[in-house]
Image 1 (cartoon, rainbow, N blue to C red):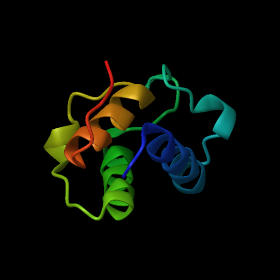
Image 2 (cartoon, one colour):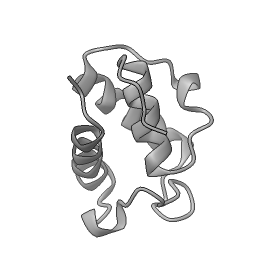
Image 3 (tube, rainbow, N blue to C red):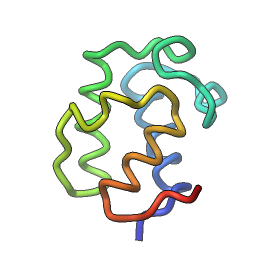
Length: 86
């Protein structure tokens, strides 16, 4: 079972390793583009890393509407078959 906490933990590691984002900046309300300097090319690389966590293939367009770290976590949980809490 893939929890929100596990997805967030993986996301913190990926953002640090791929884009040198300090872990303290990766908070749920952080905006990917404005706060973390993630551009659209970086976002595709991030999706590839998230696929490894879930062992499922995602289409980049499934992440087109995400804007925050929380959005990413929710979308990964949703696509992995885990309901995102509201």
